[in-house]
Image (cartoon, rainbow, N blue to C red; front, side):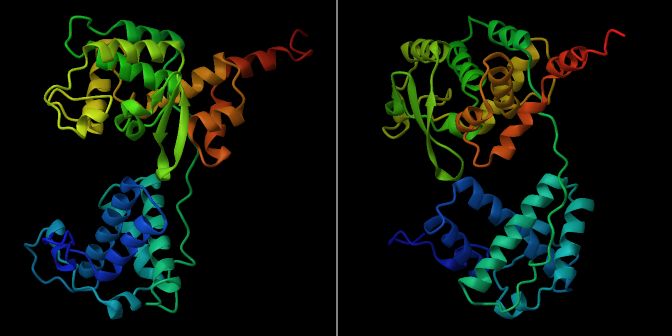
Length: 330
Protein backbone atom coordinates (compact mmCIF):
# COMPACT_ATOMS: atom_id res chain seq x y z
CA UNK A 1 0.00 0.00 0.00
CA UNK A 2 1.49 3.37 -1.00
CA UNK A 3 0.92 6.83 0.50
CA UNK A 4 -2.10 7.33 -1.77
CA UNK A 5 -3.88 4.35 -0.22
CA UNK A 6 -3.64 2.35 -3.44
CA UNK A 7 -2.45 -1.24 -3.34
CA UNK A 8 -0.11 -1.86 -6.24
CA UNK A 9 -0.84 -4.95 -8.30
CA UNK A 10 2.70 -6.30 -8.02
CA UNK A 11 2.39 -6.48 -4.24
CA UNK A 12 -0.25 -9.22 -4.59
CA UNK A 13 0.78 -12.61 -5.88
CA UNK A 14 -2.17 -12.79 -8.25
CA UNK A 15 -2.67 -12.50 -12.01
CA UNK A 16 -4.01 -9.13 -13.16
CA UNK A 17 -7.20 -10.70 -14.51
CA UNK A 18 -7.91 -12.28 -11.12
CA UNK A 19 -7.39 -8.95 -9.34
CA UNK A 20 -9.78 -7.32 -11.82
CA UNK A 21 -12.33 -10.07 -11.18
CA UNK A 22 -12.12 -9.70 -7.39
CA UNK A 23 -12.53 -5.93 -7.70
CA UNK A 24 -15.58 -6.53 -9.89
CA UNK A 25 -17.11 -8.83 -7.28
CA UNK A 26 -16.62 -6.20 -4.59
CA UNK A 27 -17.56 -2.98 -6.36
CA UNK A 28 -20.16 -4.08 -8.90
CA UNK A 29 -21.62 -7.31 -7.56
CA UNK A 30 -21.43 -6.27 -3.91
CA UNK A 31 -20.19 -9.66 -2.72
CA UNK A 32 -19.23 -10.10 0.92
CA UNK A 33 -15.63 -10.13 2.13
CA UNK A 34 -15.92 -13.83 2.95
CA UNK A 35 -17.18 -14.70 -0.54
CA UNK A 36 -14.43 -12.71 -2.24
CA UNK A 37 -11.74 -14.28 -0.06
CA UNK A 38 -13.12 -17.74 -0.79
CA UNK A 39 -13.01 -17.11 -4.54
CA UNK A 40 -9.47 -15.75 -4.27
CA UNK A 41 -8.26 -18.84 -2.41
CA UNK A 42 -9.94 -21.27 -4.82
CA UNK A 43 -8.77 -19.54 -7.99
CA UNK A 44 -5.23 -19.03 -6.69
CA UNK A 45 -5.11 -22.77 -5.96
CA UNK A 46 -6.37 -23.45 -9.48
CA UNK A 47 -3.58 -21.41 -11.09
CA UNK A 48 -0.87 -22.93 -8.87
CA UNK A 49 -2.10 -26.38 -9.83
CA UNK A 50 -2.05 -25.46 -13.54
CA UNK A 51 1.54 -24.23 -13.39
CA UNK A 52 2.57 -27.63 -12.04
CA UNK A 53 0.22 -29.60 -14.30
CA UNK A 54 1.41 -27.83 -17.46
CA UNK A 55 5.09 -28.20 -16.56
CA UNK A 56 5.95 -24.60 -15.64
CA UNK A 57 7.46 -25.57 -12.25
CA UNK A 58 10.87 -27.27 -12.40
CA UNK A 59 11.99 -26.68 -8.82
CA UNK A 60 10.93 -29.82 -6.91
CA UNK A 61 11.76 -28.19 -3.56
CA UNK A 62 9.20 -25.43 -4.07
CA UNK A 63 6.21 -25.72 -1.75
CA UNK A 64 2.73 -25.44 -3.26
CA UNK A 65 1.93 -22.20 -1.41
CA UNK A 66 5.19 -20.66 -2.62
CA UNK A 67 4.30 -20.92 -6.32
CA UNK A 68 4.17 -17.49 -7.95
CA UNK A 69 1.14 -16.99 -10.20
CA UNK A 70 1.53 -13.26 -10.80
CA UNK A 71 3.09 -13.93 -14.21
CA UNK A 72 0.04 -15.74 -15.60
CA UNK A 73 -1.04 -13.71 -18.62
CA UNK A 74 -3.96 -13.68 -21.03
CA UNK A 75 -2.20 -16.09 -23.41
CA UNK A 76 -1.94 -18.65 -20.60
CA UNK A 77 -5.61 -18.15 -19.69
CA UNK A 78 -6.75 -18.65 -23.29
CA UNK A 79 -4.95 -22.02 -23.34
CA UNK A 80 -7.06 -23.44 -20.51
CA UNK A 81 -9.32 -26.29 -21.61
CA UNK A 82 -12.20 -28.18 -20.03
CA UNK A 83 -9.89 -31.15 -19.44
CA UNK A 84 -7.66 -28.90 -17.31
CA UNK A 85 -10.66 -28.11 -15.13
CA UNK A 86 -11.43 -31.80 -14.70
CA UNK A 87 -7.80 -32.44 -13.74
CA UNK A 88 -7.95 -29.67 -11.12
CA UNK A 89 -11.14 -31.03 -9.56
CA UNK A 90 -9.58 -34.49 -9.46
CA UNK A 91 -6.55 -32.98 -7.69
CA UNK A 92 -8.74 -31.26 -5.08
CA UNK A 93 -10.57 -34.51 -4.38
CA UNK A 94 -7.62 -36.89 -4.25
CA UNK A 95 -4.79 -34.68 -3.01
CA UNK A 96 -6.71 -32.08 -0.97
CA UNK A 97 -9.45 -34.40 0.27
CA UNK A 98 -12.16 -31.95 -0.80
CA UNK A 99 -15.69 -33.23 -0.40
CA UNK A 100 -18.55 -32.49 -2.77
CA UNK A 101 -19.41 -29.18 -1.08
CA UNK A 102 -15.84 -27.85 -1.37
CA UNK A 103 -15.53 -28.97 -4.98
CA UNK A 104 -18.93 -27.49 -5.84
CA UNK A 105 -17.73 -24.15 -4.44
CA UNK A 106 -14.63 -24.33 -6.64
CA UNK A 107 -16.79 -25.05 -9.69
CA UNK A 108 -18.89 -21.98 -8.85
CA UNK A 109 -15.75 -19.85 -8.53
CA UNK A 110 -14.39 -21.07 -11.87
CA UNK A 111 -17.69 -20.51 -13.67
CA UNK A 112 -18.02 -16.99 -12.29
CA UNK A 113 -14.42 -16.09 -13.13
CA UNK A 114 -14.50 -17.37 -16.73
CA UNK A 115 -17.90 -15.76 -17.29
CA UNK A 116 -16.29 -12.46 -16.26
CA UNK A 117 -13.33 -13.07 -18.58
CA UNK A 118 -15.66 -13.66 -21.52
CA UNK A 119 -18.46 -11.17 -20.90
CA UNK A 120 -16.82 -8.28 -19.06
CA UNK A 121 -13.05 -8.36 -19.54
CA UNK A 122 -13.29 -9.71 -23.12
CA UNK A 123 -10.12 -11.75 -22.57
CA UNK A 124 -11.46 -15.05 -23.90
CA UNK A 125 -13.83 -15.93 -26.73
CA UNK A 126 -14.59 -19.50 -25.66
CA UNK A 127 -15.61 -20.24 -22.09
CA UNK A 128 -14.25 -23.66 -20.98
CA UNK A 129 -16.61 -23.82 -17.98
CA UNK A 130 -19.82 -23.88 -20.03
CA UNK A 131 -19.80 -27.68 -20.05
CA UNK A 132 -18.40 -27.98 -16.52
CA UNK A 133 -20.87 -29.70 -14.22
CA UNK A 134 -20.98 -29.23 -10.47
CA UNK A 135 -20.54 -32.36 -8.30
CA UNK A 136 -23.86 -33.79 -7.22
CA UNK A 137 -24.56 -32.91 -3.60
CA UNK A 138 -26.69 -35.31 -1.63
CA UNK A 139 -29.03 -33.43 0.67
CA UNK A 140 -28.25 -34.19 4.29
CA UNK A 141 -30.53 -33.89 7.26
CA UNK A 142 -29.38 -31.09 9.56
CA UNK A 143 -27.66 -32.04 12.81
CA UNK A 144 -29.20 -30.29 15.79
CA UNK A 145 -29.67 -30.33 19.55
CA UNK A 146 -32.96 -31.44 21.01
CA UNK A 147 -34.97 -29.09 23.20
CA UNK A 148 -33.72 -30.82 26.37
CA UNK A 149 -30.10 -30.71 25.16
CA UNK A 150 -30.44 -27.00 24.38
CA UNK A 151 -31.80 -26.24 27.84
CA UNK A 152 -29.04 -28.34 29.40
CA UNK A 153 -26.37 -26.50 27.39
CA UNK A 154 -27.53 -23.09 28.59
CA UNK A 155 -27.83 -24.21 32.21
CA UNK A 156 -24.40 -25.90 32.22
CA UNK A 157 -22.37 -22.68 31.87
CA UNK A 158 -20.15 -21.79 34.81
CA UNK A 159 -21.71 -18.71 36.42
CA UNK A 160 -18.43 -17.85 38.18
CA UNK A 161 -16.60 -17.41 34.86
CA UNK A 162 -15.73 -13.83 33.91
CA UNK A 163 -17.15 -14.52 30.46
CA UNK A 164 -20.37 -16.14 31.67
CA UNK A 165 -22.77 -13.38 30.59
CA UNK A 166 -21.07 -12.93 27.21
CA UNK A 167 -21.01 -16.65 26.43
CA UNK A 168 -24.58 -17.12 27.65
CA UNK A 169 -25.63 -14.24 25.38
CA UNK A 170 -23.85 -15.84 22.40
CA UNK A 171 -25.46 -19.25 22.91
CA UNK A 172 -28.88 -17.69 23.51
CA UNK A 173 -28.70 -15.70 20.26
CA UNK A 174 -27.62 -18.78 18.30
CA UNK A 175 -30.32 -21.02 19.77
CA UNK A 176 -33.16 -18.50 19.55
CA UNK A 177 -32.46 -16.49 16.40
CA UNK A 178 -30.63 -18.95 14.17
CA UNK A 179 -28.14 -16.35 12.98
CA UNK A 180 -24.95 -17.18 11.15
CA UNK A 181 -21.56 -17.06 12.88
CA UNK A 182 -20.41 -14.07 10.81
CA UNK A 183 -23.67 -12.26 11.57
CA UNK A 184 -23.28 -12.77 15.31
CA UNK A 185 -19.68 -11.50 15.37
CA UNK A 186 -20.63 -8.35 13.48
CA UNK A 187 -23.53 -7.24 15.75
CA UNK A 188 -23.30 -3.55 16.60
CA UNK A 189 -24.97 -2.09 19.69
CA UNK A 190 -26.65 0.77 17.86
CA UNK A 191 -28.42 -1.76 15.60
CA UNK A 192 -30.39 -3.12 18.55
CA UNK A 193 -33.72 -1.29 18.84
CA UNK A 194 -36.12 -2.80 21.36
CA UNK A 195 -36.94 -6.28 20.11
CA UNK A 196 -35.33 -5.85 16.70
CA UNK A 197 -31.75 -6.26 15.54
CA UNK A 198 -30.48 -5.20 12.13
CA UNK A 199 -27.63 -7.30 10.78
CA UNK A 200 -25.72 -7.66 7.53
CA UNK A 201 -26.28 -11.20 6.31
CA UNK A 202 -24.87 -13.33 3.54
CA UNK A 203 -24.14 -11.42 0.34
CA UNK A 204 -24.06 -8.09 2.24
CA UNK A 205 -27.85 -8.16 2.47
CA UNK A 206 -29.39 -6.32 5.39
CA UNK A 207 -32.10 -8.13 7.32
CA UNK A 208 -34.01 -7.74 10.56
CA UNK A 209 -33.76 -10.27 13.37
CA UNK A 210 -36.53 -10.24 15.94
CA UNK A 211 -35.41 -10.77 19.52
CA UNK A 212 -37.55 -12.73 21.93
CA UNK A 213 -37.63 -12.25 25.71
CA UNK A 214 -34.69 -14.58 26.35
CA UNK A 215 -32.47 -12.73 23.86
CA UNK A 216 -33.37 -9.29 25.20
CA UNK A 217 -32.65 -10.43 28.75
CA UNK A 218 -29.33 -12.07 27.80
CA UNK A 219 -28.16 -8.95 25.94
CA UNK A 220 -29.22 -6.69 28.82
CA UNK A 221 -27.40 -8.79 31.43
CA UNK A 222 -24.25 -8.86 29.30
CA UNK A 223 -24.28 -5.10 28.71
CA UNK A 224 -24.33 -4.54 32.48
CA UNK A 225 -20.91 -6.19 32.85
CA UNK A 226 -19.46 -5.54 29.38
CA UNK A 227 -16.14 -3.68 29.70
CA UNK A 228 -15.07 -1.59 26.72
CA UNK A 229 -12.76 0.75 28.68
CA UNK A 230 -9.67 -0.44 26.80
CA UNK A 231 -11.30 -0.68 23.37
CA UNK A 232 -10.46 1.49 20.39
CA UNK A 233 -13.27 3.87 19.46
CA UNK A 234 -14.39 1.83 16.44
CA UNK A 235 -14.31 -1.44 18.39
CA UNK A 236 -16.67 -0.10 21.06
CA UNK A 237 -19.48 -0.25 18.48
CA UNK A 238 -19.49 -4.05 18.53
CA UNK A 239 -21.66 -5.89 21.04
CA UNK A 240 -19.46 -8.94 21.66
CA UNK A 241 -15.90 -8.31 22.81
CA UNK A 242 -12.98 -10.64 23.35
CA UNK A 243 -10.78 -10.73 26.44
CA UNK A 244 -8.36 -8.52 24.51
CA UNK A 245 -10.97 -5.80 24.12
CA UNK A 246 -11.43 -6.45 20.41
CA UNK A 247 -14.59 -7.46 18.55
CA UNK A 248 -14.88 -11.21 19.05
CA UNK A 249 -13.77 -13.22 16.03
CA UNK A 250 -15.26 -16.34 14.48
CA UNK A 251 -12.53 -18.68 15.67
CA UNK A 252 -12.98 -17.60 19.30
CA UNK A 253 -16.71 -18.25 19.07
CA UNK A 254 -16.11 -21.68 17.49
CA UNK A 255 -13.79 -22.63 20.33
CA UNK A 256 -16.08 -21.42 23.11
CA UNK A 257 -19.06 -23.24 21.57
CA UNK A 258 -17.02 -26.44 21.42
CA UNK A 259 -15.92 -25.96 25.05
CA UNK A 260 -19.43 -25.41 26.36
CA UNK A 261 -20.82 -28.30 24.31
CA UNK A 262 -18.20 -30.59 25.85
CA UNK A 263 -18.78 -29.26 29.37
CA UNK A 264 -22.52 -29.83 29.01
CA UNK A 265 -21.89 -33.56 28.59
CA UNK A 266 -22.69 -33.76 24.88
CA UNK A 267 -19.01 -33.98 23.96
CA UNK A 268 -19.64 -34.02 20.24
CA UNK A 269 -17.31 -32.17 17.88
CA UNK A 270 -19.98 -31.97 15.19
CA UNK A 271 -21.94 -29.41 17.22
CA UNK A 272 -20.51 -26.23 15.73
CA UNK A 273 -22.03 -22.71 15.70
CA UNK A 274 -23.70 -23.65 12.42
CA UNK A 275 -25.31 -26.65 14.10
CA UNK A 276 -26.71 -24.28 16.75
CA UNK A 277 -28.24 -22.32 13.86
CA UNK A 278 -29.77 -25.61 12.69
CA UNK A 279 -31.03 -26.17 16.23
CA UNK A 280 -32.83 -22.81 16.33
CA UNK A 281 -34.51 -23.48 12.99
CA UNK A 282 -35.50 -27.01 13.96
CA UNK A 283 -36.95 -25.99 17.33
CA UNK A 284 -38.98 -23.22 15.70
CA UNK A 285 -40.29 -25.62 13.08
CA UNK A 286 -41.04 -28.51 15.46
CA UNK A 287 -42.29 -26.64 18.51
CA UNK A 288 -43.31 -23.19 17.30
CA UNK A 289 -45.54 -24.07 14.35
CA UNK A 290 -43.49 -21.75 12.15
CA UNK A 291 -44.32 -22.16 8.47
CA UNK A 292 -41.58 -22.72 5.94
CA UNK A 293 -41.83 -19.24 4.36
CA UNK A 294 -41.47 -17.53 7.74
CA UNK A 295 -38.53 -19.77 8.57
CA UNK A 296 -36.89 -18.81 5.27
CA UNK A 297 -37.14 -15.14 6.21
CA UNK A 298 -35.88 -15.71 9.75
CA UNK A 299 -32.81 -17.61 8.54
CA UNK A 300 -32.08 -15.24 5.66
CA UNK A 301 -32.16 -17.96 3.02
CA UNK A 302 -32.29 -16.68 -0.55
CA UNK A 303 -33.88 -19.88 -1.87
CA UNK A 304 -36.62 -21.76 -0.07
CA UNK A 305 -35.07 -25.04 -1.20
CA UNK A 306 -32.33 -24.40 1.38
CA UNK A 307 -34.95 -24.04 4.11
CA UNK A 308 -36.85 -27.15 3.12
CA UNK A 309 -34.32 -29.43 4.81
CA UNK A 310 -36.12 -28.61 8.06
CA UNK A 311 -39.35 -30.17 6.82
CA UNK A 312 -37.68 -33.60 6.99
CA UNK A 313 -36.30 -33.52 10.51
CA UNK A 314 -39.29 -34.57 12.60
CA UNK A 315 -39.31 -38.36 12.80
CA UNK A 316 -42.10 -38.25 15.41
CA UNK A 317 -44.47 -36.64 12.92
CA UNK A 318 -43.64 -39.31 10.33
CA UNK A 319 -44.10 -42.06 12.91
CA UNK A 320 -47.48 -40.68 13.98
CA UNK A 321 -48.55 -40.34 10.35
CA UNK A 322 -47.90 -44.03 9.73
CA UNK A 323 -49.68 -44.99 12.96
CA UNK A 324 -52.73 -42.97 11.88
CA UNK A 325 -53.28 -45.18 8.88
CA UNK A 326 -56.70 -46.87 9.45
CA UNK A 327 -55.14 -50.20 8.50
CA UNK A 328 -52.51 -49.97 11.24
CA UNK A 329 -54.67 -51.81 13.82
CA UNK A 330 -55.58 -54.79 11.65
